[in-house]
Image 1: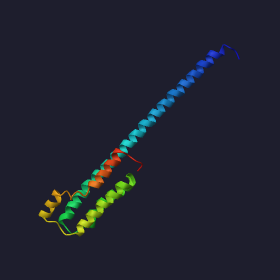
Image 2: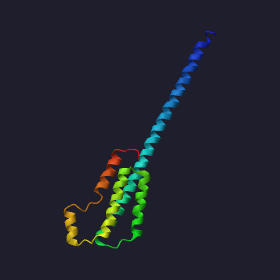
Image 3: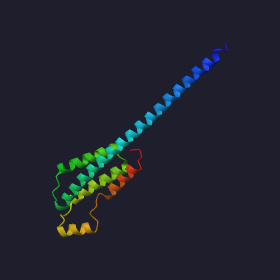
Image 4: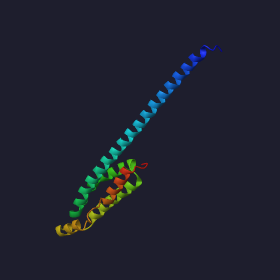
Length: 147
């Protein structure tokens, strides 16, 4: 091999290594940015779902406290939200959501509450059916696990 080719080959090899390093660095950066974006979107989607569930469950629970006639059509939306949670959430969140729905149905089947009974429930803090669900959601959102 001609010694004059050695500096040219070294420069060519250096350029190739530099180009591959630059490409690998850009690819890894883009990969990590895409992953972070997907995780944030998934978290936002779960937050929206949990908000919808809390809103719907609160309305149904308030209605169940003062009415004893349960219409199945009123429960369709909350069951749809629980079904969406089966896809997006951990099993612990789904279990808490199902417990809330079960409690709403049981409340419809129980005797209506009077105003003094409602006041007593509120003052004793026994009227917070969504506490366990909310705490589980907070834990999932703060410390995400595989859903």
